[in-house]
Amino acid sequence: MVIATQYAVTELGYEYTIVHPSNADIRFIGSDNSSDGVRVLRVDGTNGTNAKIKIELGNWSANQNKTYTAAFGIVNEEKFAVNITHINVSTTGTDYMQIWLHGDRDENPASDSTSVFMWDKGSIVNASTTTAWTLAYGDANKGTMKDNVSAGGTITTPWDDTAHVRYSVDDTNAYGVGVNGRTITNASDFVWVQVSIDLPASPTSGGAQTGTIWIHFEATTQYGED
Image (cartoon, rainbow, N blue to C red):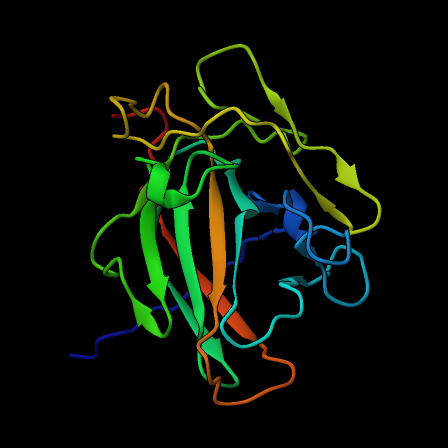
């Protein structure tokens, strides 16, 4: 008996759009200014839909600590909640950076009960197997963010023509899902990121210190569930 094998070929299309990091479905916005008077978060190089962004933390010397309580913000525009699990940093030299997630834009995490310590000078603090912060579902509006996704009020995130990013200096606090009793239906769709540089008395090297911050997200794509 001869057994015939059948094959078929079909096709389907796909689409996605590459946009500016301040206009993505999970997007980054500026807030604090750096030492040069420009926002800490800014475009690195040429602006455009394929722009890269960086944080510019200034010029500091041995034994100094510089803290930006709102170095940048993260806003969720997807129609479902998004978890931030952990943050890690790669660097060209010794790592003196510390990073927190928190809800109060102008408050140091030591005084902010919502804060989550994420990175400490070369070490992950919040483990990759746990959720540090859950952003409530967004509304796909790149010009606003919400401290309560079910409320009518919105916080605008206008465009900064110097840093070439969206930004906010609104002091309305953010609350993640599970923080202060907030649920997926009344939590915030944004969070602030504090970055500190804590230099010792004898840094191992001078000059420019560069690297990459990796922020890890995960989500189950179910809209509006607790």
